[in-house]
Picture 1 (tube, one colour):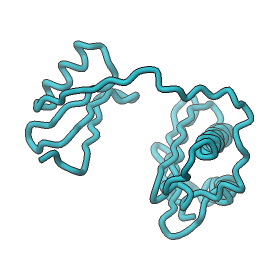
Picture 2 (cartoon, rainbow, N blue to C red):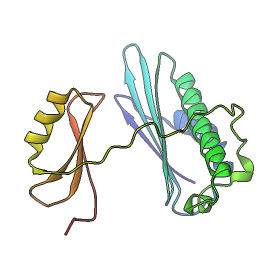
Picture 3 (cartoon, rainbow, N blue to C red):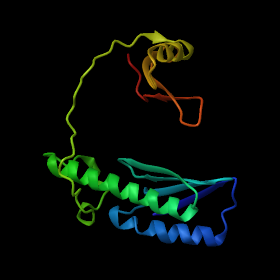
Length: 183
């Protein structure tokens, strides 16, 4: 697994890097490691603590955990626990499904303990179909705010792509766009 460790408002010393890589190495047993698996850690220091974002990129799925804590090393441990929990849920979901999809090519499922809580409710409770109207990003943001939602799906009038505008936790907006265009 390749590691990228980035510091914001903090210098990543060799000691911090070594400690992070040691803690992150426990995750490598869960992945079929090749040159396409990367783990990126972003460390943000604040007056009252640290925020750690860990993202594991595989060719088929990205896993991400973000934790704020007053102790840096505790934040790392909690984030790793969150990632392991995500993998246990994924394994449970995959074990229930008839086919393992492409995700089986990225994960060493035999090393992941199944979710102990069998009461995971993954029932789809509502289905909604949408007619996507071409509109500008400004109009999409206005409609999202008018509805009081955290996200809004629309068809971008400039490039005819399915797009999602959303409120970011740190303020501002984000946009997700589909790579394939509607013809």
